[in-house]
Length: 59
Image 1: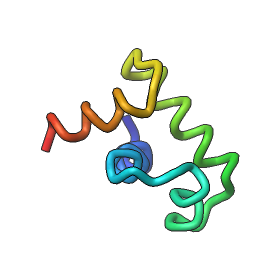
Image 2: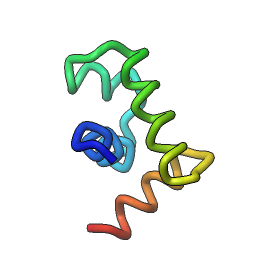
Image 3: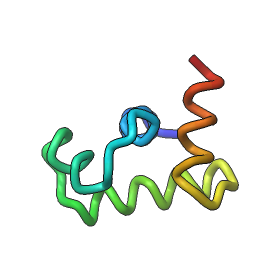
Image 4: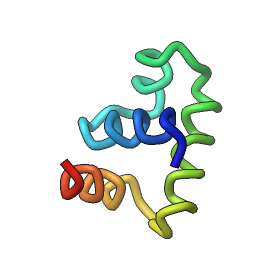
Protein backbone atom coordinates (compact mmCIF):
# COMPACT_ATOMS: atom_id res chain seq x y z
CA UNK A 1 0.00 0.00 0.00
CA UNK A 2 1.27 3.45 -0.87
CA UNK A 3 2.00 6.01 1.86
CA UNK A 4 -1.00 8.07 0.69
CA UNK A 5 -3.28 5.02 0.86
CA UNK A 6 -2.07 4.36 4.40
CA UNK A 7 -2.87 7.97 5.26
CA UNK A 8 -6.37 7.63 3.78
CA UNK A 9 -6.90 4.35 5.65
CA UNK A 10 -6.04 6.06 8.94
CA UNK A 11 -8.58 8.81 8.22
CA UNK A 12 -11.21 6.17 7.41
CA UNK A 13 -10.45 4.61 10.80
CA UNK A 14 -11.05 8.01 12.42
CA UNK A 15 -14.56 7.93 10.98
CA UNK A 16 -14.09 10.51 8.25
CA UNK A 17 -16.27 10.45 5.15
CA UNK A 18 -14.73 10.52 1.68
CA UNK A 19 -15.66 14.20 1.42
CA UNK A 20 -13.94 14.96 4.74
CA UNK A 21 -10.86 12.99 3.69
CA UNK A 22 -10.71 14.93 0.43
CA UNK A 23 -10.95 18.24 2.28
CA UNK A 24 -8.31 17.25 4.84
CA UNK A 25 -5.83 16.07 2.21
CA UNK A 26 -6.68 18.80 -0.29
CA UNK A 27 -7.60 16.30 -3.02
CA UNK A 28 -10.78 15.81 -5.03
CA UNK A 29 -13.55 13.61 -3.68
CA UNK A 30 -13.08 11.37 -6.70
CA UNK A 31 -9.41 10.89 -5.78
CA UNK A 32 -10.39 10.00 -2.22
CA UNK A 33 -12.93 7.51 -3.59
CA UNK A 34 -10.23 6.01 -5.79
CA UNK A 35 -7.77 5.64 -2.90
CA UNK A 36 -10.41 3.83 -0.85
CA UNK A 37 -11.27 1.50 -3.74
CA UNK A 38 -7.56 0.67 -4.12
CA UNK A 39 -7.24 0.00 -0.38
CA UNK A 40 -10.29 -2.28 -0.43
CA UNK A 41 -8.91 -4.17 -3.43
CA UNK A 42 -5.38 -4.54 -2.07
CA UNK A 43 -6.60 -5.83 1.29
CA UNK A 44 -9.42 -7.95 -0.14
CA UNK A 45 -12.01 -6.06 1.89
CA UNK A 46 -15.58 -5.07 1.06
CA UNK A 47 -16.23 -2.23 3.50
CA UNK A 48 -14.80 0.83 5.17
CA UNK A 49 -15.42 -0.87 8.51
CA UNK A 50 -12.95 -3.58 7.59
CA UNK A 51 -10.37 -0.91 6.77
CA UNK A 52 -10.96 0.74 10.16
CA UNK A 53 -10.55 -2.57 12.00
CA UNK A 54 -7.37 -3.33 10.05
CA UNK A 55 -5.87 0.06 10.92
CA UNK A 56 -6.82 -0.32 14.59
CA UNK A 57 -5.25 -3.77 14.82
CA UNK A 58 -2.01 -2.55 13.24
CA UNK A 59 -1.51 0.33 15.66
